[in-house]
Length: 131
Image 1 (cartoon, one colour):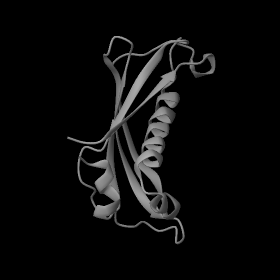
Image 2 (tube, rainbow, N blue to C red):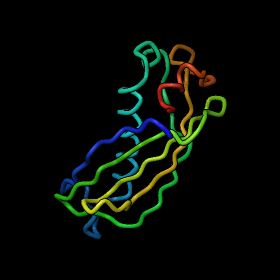
Image 3 (tube, rainbow, N blue to C red):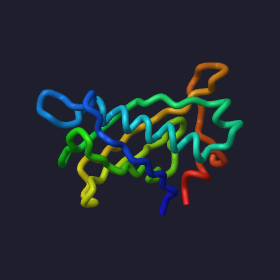
């Protein structure tokens, strides 16, 4: 069991590609928005001030899409313990019927803001994200 974070996104006209649905780049932006919102909602203020995250891998599976005016609910959670500086994150986007239409597994690395270098994710930093 993990601590999750949810957020709703509504497709705007500028999110729509030539095929008439949300562009893949928008889904990636929403994944990043979910990760950032989760970090800012759960992490200790001193950790937010001291560390930043960079993505090192995005892997998305598309099982559906939405059009302008439709909304999805994104849910993000951390599926397991960090590995050194790396922390995997899962994001699932559900349509109005509750079906997962886009899912993502992303890997992020934590960076010390002062030095700009990768740093190990300590247990006290990861604990609030894990149930």
